[in-house]
Image (tube, rainbow, N blue to C red; front, side, top):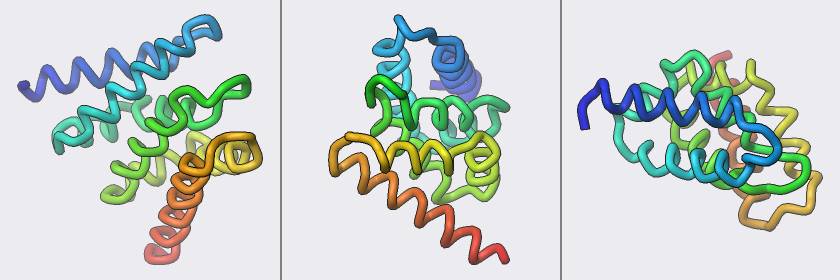
Length: 132
């Protein structure tokens, strides 16, 4: 896959997630899972971080009021990009990830998802502490 292909793929999936309506939630969750899969490629991580709406789309999927489809893929994706990138952490925080994580932790999601949410919160905090 070329750099241009990664950019088009990430951009298309991000746009779909951000524009998805209630009736399209399962499709948005599938799009989030696809993003999670391609983030194994370093260039795809860069494209997600550099897409102005990329991290925001993942944050949007962290907590869905009526269901948790896509939450785990969103958390995995955010963990991958935030671990390595200050820019991704800043984008996530600006997009409201802290509120989304706290809402998710208070919800009826499964233990694995709660553990990942807690891990992301700790990562954001530890990286913040390192920056200060």
